[in-house]
Image (cartoon, rainbow, N blue to C red; front, top):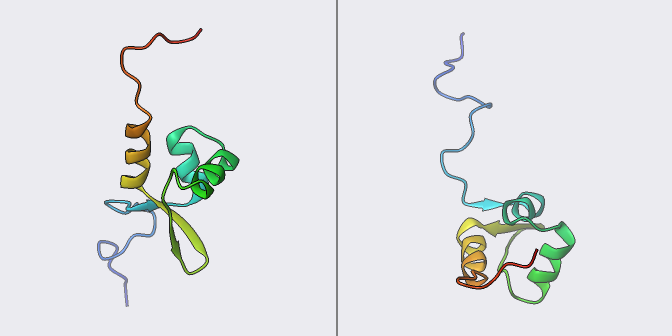
Length: 77
């Protein structure tokens, strides 16, 4: 019996990703994994444990970036 390809495709990404693994989260906010771990340990970035997997919600990463936003200051060159 033929499998309907429109029912399920492994190659298609999820329509909306809710959380990222540490490597993805670090890349998303432009820091190293070590820095992400430090920020998590200090409580500056929230994370979620699902079993033994640590995940970072996109909304928490966005909140972290918003809290670090700088407006109207000179940029060091």
